[in-house]
Image (cartoon, rainbow, N blue to C red; front, side, top):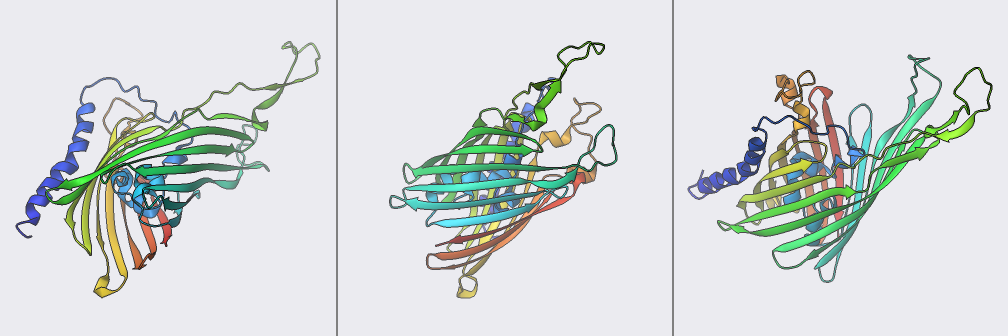
Length: 373
C-alpha cells in the first residue's frame, strides 16, 4: 500500500462508518418498539432497479448516474452523459419475479434529463385454499403489481442536481384491485475531499396516497334480516376496506472515491435509511471498476454491500429483544455482484449480475442489461 493511499483509506472508513453510528445510537434508548412492521402495502416498490444497484444496496443513491438513477435518486439522471435504456429481471423468492425497465434522455445541452420507468412483480395460477377445502380447490388466482414513473431532473450548478419522479401504482390481488399515486424526490451534491470525488445524496421515495382496494373480491350478498327464521332475499353489499400506506422511505447517502483515475476507480459508500414500516437501518458497500482493458473498449466492475434492516432482527417471542437470529440468518442483507461493459465513442453496452442473500429464505439473483448511445 502506498503512502498516499493509506490516509485515503482511513478517511474513507471514517466517512463510511459515520452514518451507521447514528443508527446504533437510536436503538440504545430502551423505549418500547411501536414500529408498524408489515403495515405498508406495495412493498414491491422496494425491490430495486438493475443489478448494479441491488449489489450495492440502497447506498447506490449517492453514486447513481445511469438509467437506474430514476429509481434510486432522480437527481442522478441529470448527470447522464447520453441517452440510455436498461432492463432487468429479478428471480425473487417463492417462484415470483420482478422486472424493471427504464429509458432516459438528456436535453437542454445536458442540463436536464427526462426518463420513463416501469416495474412489475407477481405470479400466476396459484391454487386457492379455503376452510372447507384446506388442501386444494379447483380455483386459481394471480397477483400482478405494477408501477409506472416519469422522472425529470436538472443540474442547478456544476455541483448540485435535483429531480423528482411522479408514479402510479397499480395492484391486482386476485379479484381485488387497488391503485395509488406517489412521488420521489432526490438531490445530489458532488465535490472533492482530499482531491478525490465525494458525493452526498438525499432522497424521499414513495410519498403518496394510501393504496385502497375494490373489485369482485369485496362484493358480497348479505341478508336483509339477521334473523335466520325469517326468509329474506339476499341484498348486494360491499365490504368496507381500509387504505394501506405505501412504504415511504427517507435516505441519506454518501460515496467517496478512495482511488480514482482514467481507467480505475475504487468507491466506498454508506447509507442511512428510515422507513414508515421499519426502524432506522443502514447499508455499507463498495465498487471497484476498471475500463479500457489492454487498450480495448472493454471493462469490468466488482461490487459488494451489506444492508441492515431492523425488521430482520425482530424476535417474535419477545419483540423488545434486539435479535434472535442464528449465524445463518445474520447473513441476510449480504449482496455481491459484478458487471461487464463495452464502450466505443458514445456507444456503450453493459451486463450486470447481483446475488442477494435473504437469510433462511435463500438467495436471489438479479440480471440486467443496459445500452447507451
